[in-house]
Image (cartoon, rainbow, N blue to C red; front, side, top):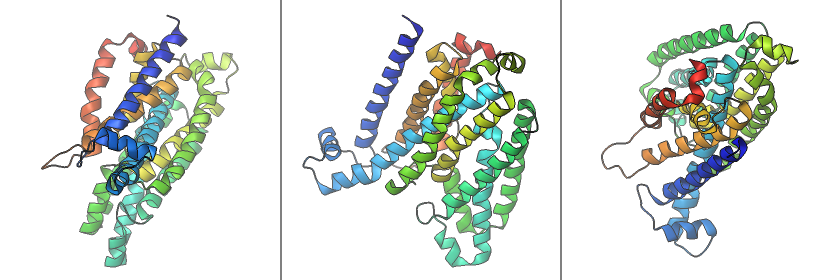
Length: 345
């Protein structure tokens, strides 16, 4: 089978799996719904008001958010691993997640000094405070890294991003020491990440920058593939490496910033999805990896969300914990057995 046909067939399988898991997530949860009633709510046929509310107002926005965020993080992971030529590079490597964490920590700590009314306003599900704080934190980290990207090489930028992340984590820990207990709980809830925190009206705001970032990722795919063989080779093909690096970083910021702002610091998806895509595609070329990584990231994010919102009786699971448990064994198996990722060794 030709490579393009093989990749298309595997992408179709991922789409089918994603649709099936979406229907399963809409049907099952703390309240189990008959499959016919779920379809009735989706198609607008006659069903109970409670079923429509559960499906259309609670579960469907969460499913859509998980698919959008997972796809964005998967594509961002492909860009990061290719840019830095490092199999463990992801959005954490740029310090973007740490910037969002610091922004939220600074906000909840400031609220502790502003009084009880401010603390009560800072909740994960009500008010724009946490979303704005995370977005500003990501933006500041992004502008800093974009500015550095014009002055230093890729490896130096990777190290600086990691150091920025560790520094932000340390400052966040210090800030939370002075935060009120309620603010600490707010930060902890945001830190655990959730696709349920986004309201239906916010979905367009989540999707818009991601679509722009995805378009930018596709535009940089061909020159970025040449960069995998080294900067000298890329320059011999006429690629302006510094300009390409800046474009890839900009695309990554667009893909990641909205996810961190609305859903929290979702971890592991951007690390796992590129390896999953390479194993399916059998190639390291960026263009075919992007849709496969998007589908794989969406599938992983939705699977984690389905586990979190399963019918647990005594315990509430956290999304990042679930993603780590689901994803780490997959990465280990892929790294050991997939010939498509041996180029990293």
